Length: 383
Image (cartoon, rainbow, N blue to C red; front, side):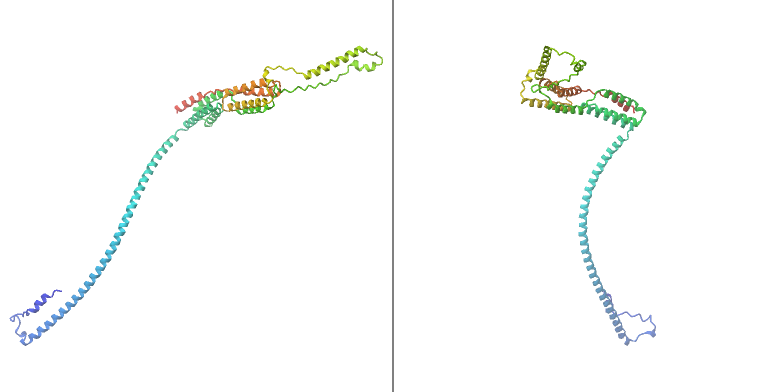
C-alpha cells in the first residue's frame, strides 16, 4: 500500500488560509493551535491504521485467492494431462479404426465391382431370356434333335431319334402356331422315313441267344448217338368176312393141305426176323467222318466252346458289332452241322434260333432328319 504522499503531507505544516481572507472575529487564538494539530495527527494515524488493516486483509485474501488459483491450475493441469493421454489413446484408436475402415472400403469396392459384373451378366441373361417364345421353342427342338442324332449314331438304334421327333411334334401341336406348320410337316416326313427303317430289338435277340446257350447241353452228338427205340408191336389183324364165316363153315369146309400151312408159317417167321434186324441196324450218312472220332471226354469242351461262341455273339450284339455277331453265329452253325445230330429236335430248335438272330442282327442306317433341320433354320431366320 502506497502511503508516501500522506507522509509528505505530515512532514510539512499545513498551510493556513490567509488572514486577510477571514473575518477578524474568526481568528483562532495562538494558544489553541497545538491541540488542533494533535487531533489531526491522531485522525490521520487512525485512517492510516484502517488503511493498513484493509490492505492487510486484501493482501491476505489475495494470497488465499492466488493459492486457490494455483491449486485450481494444478488440478486443471492434471486434468489436461489425463485428457491429453486419453486424447492420444483415442487418436490411436481412431487411426486403427480408420485403417480398418479403409480395408472395409476396399473390400466393399471389390464387392461392388463383383456385383456390377454379376449385374451385367444378369442383364445379359435377362436379355437372352427376353427373346420371343417362338425362337425359344425352335432352339430347344433343334438342340434336342441334334442330341438324339448323336445318341442314334452311338447306339446304332433309331429309338432316340423317333422319340425326339414325336416329342417335338407334340410340343408344336400344343403350341399351335400357324407359322410353324411347315416345321410340323417336315417332322412328320422325317418321322415316317425313320420309322420305315426296321428297328433292332436287342433285348429279344439277347434272350434268344441265352435260350440257345441253354439248349447246347441237350444237343446229341453224332459220336454218342442213342439207338432208336423201335418197338415192333404186333398189329391186330382185323377179321375178314371170310375168316368170320370160317368157324361157321369149318365143319362143312374141308381142311387145308399141309404145304399151304407150312408156307404161311415160314413167311411169318421171315418177316419177324427182318423187322428185328432193321431195329438193330441203322444206316446214317455222315458228311464229316471226324465227328465219329470225337472222344467222349472232348464232348464237354465242344459244348463249352459253343457256349463261349454264343456269349461272344451276345456281347457283340450288345455293343452293336453286327459283323462280329454274324461271324460267331456262322461258326456256331458250322459246329452244329459237324458234330451234332441235325435230325434231333433240340438241334433243329437251336438252328431256328440262330437263323432268327442272324436275320435280325444287321447294321441299320438311320436317315438323318434333314427336312426338319432345314425347316427349323428357315423358321428361326424368318422371325
